[in-house]
Image (cartoon, rainbow, N blue to C red; front, side, top):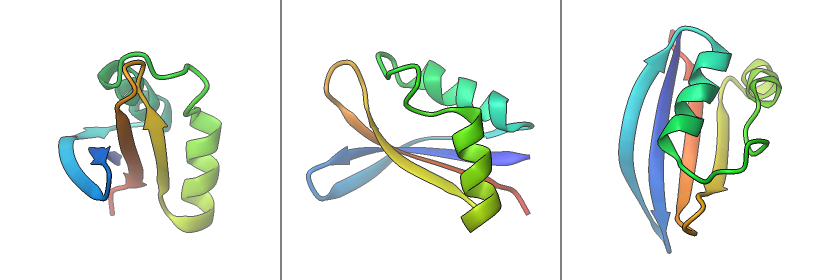
Length: 79
C-alpha cells in the first residue's frame, strides 16, 4: 500500500489539496496523472517512483500542470 499526497506550490507556500492511497506503484502514478490535468505523461513514471522508494523510502517531485500551476507529489509506502 502506498499513500499519495498532492500539494499546490505557490511561491513559498505549500497547500495540501489531495490525499489518497493506492495498492501498487502503477496505481499511484495513474491517480496522480488523473488528478493533475495537463501534466506531461513522462513527468512521473512507475520506475522512477519505485527506484526512489527503494533508495530513500519515498518519492517527491514538483510538477507543473498544463495551466502553469505547480504541485508537489509525494508517494510513500504505508508502514
